Length: 345
Image: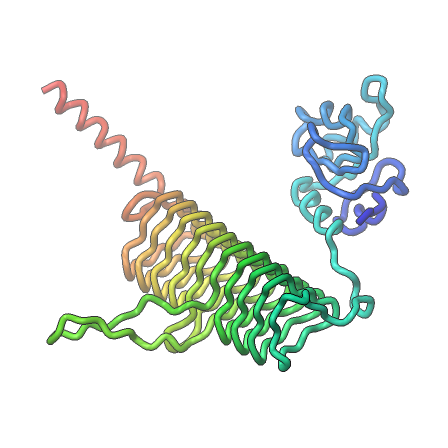
């Protein structure tokens, strides 16, 4: 979908220098850009390269404004969009090229002829359901939501508007997704939690009831092959704006706060609370009933023991058991010195 630079500037809050009638239709890197593409630079060292590229326009910071009246070699200066956060403006612009039709313009929901959809299912305007997808009774899908091929959607699932569900996603019965949720291929949402009771007499395990639900709020993105369990008796909840990478597992009864970022291969046990704006690095492991306070950053492969509480907005933790990174590095340095001492002796 082509957009004029004037439209993009207004949408992302950038100041336009150049011809606002110029249209672009995609985003690209500086090296691969064509005249139909938009690129960005975050510092002046890459600006000259961007201005000499084939791109149709460049999003840049205030540093680029001083060059706005000059040429770039023998090539005329290309239009600039000046923003105090070029990378953010670039990301916002990228969404414009894939924006769904406006309300009232979409056709009634449609499904591929190979899809199996229960007669009670409600498809909003503009919904698209892909090949071989199965949708069980009582499910509702909001306007302009798209469901990829081979998905399995259980009974009573509610999916909001403008969602993107990629191929082979499984959504268990009773799960709720808000608006603008993106779920990548192979993810499993609302499966049983890992909960068992051991019979002391026989040594056998009895499955503890897993009859709660999973609620995913607006603007959440879930990576490929991620798994999120529903609550045992109550609910698992992923709050607005959380971003979950590929191959992440979130156990039953977890509460994930707003704008939380969780990197790949992280594993969360049951009943964990992750407060707002937490960042978890790759391969982090957190034990049951732990709590991670608002704004905490936990480095890759960090480990948090069961029932532990980490607090400190903006504080980085690392290691197992996790501790403030400065303390952890100091301990590593001490161990290194002791090791050298032992070798000398």
